View (tube, rainbow, N blue to C red):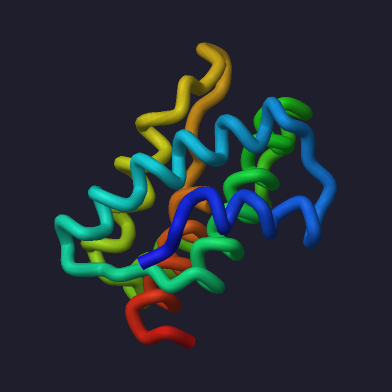
Length: 121
């Protein structure tokens, strides 16, 4: 299982960020640890860095009122229900602006990272 502080040290080496955004990512990654452990998912460091970068990109999209392209509903059939649920639970812990709705693409792509962590791909 990843160490949140070690993950946060690595993220700025891979992408542009700010202390404020890193603090939000820290909060989400901290909340993710027990959530993932509840379903028996141990996320390795490298996968946690990727998830952290994904969360950072999500925060940028929210700030800029951008959305990922829509995905076909059938794509969810390729992802386990527990990864989809974990993705939704983690996003529900983020204080989304009232006008912003969580779209299926965000849920799907974060869930893909959880699936990859399961198989350690």
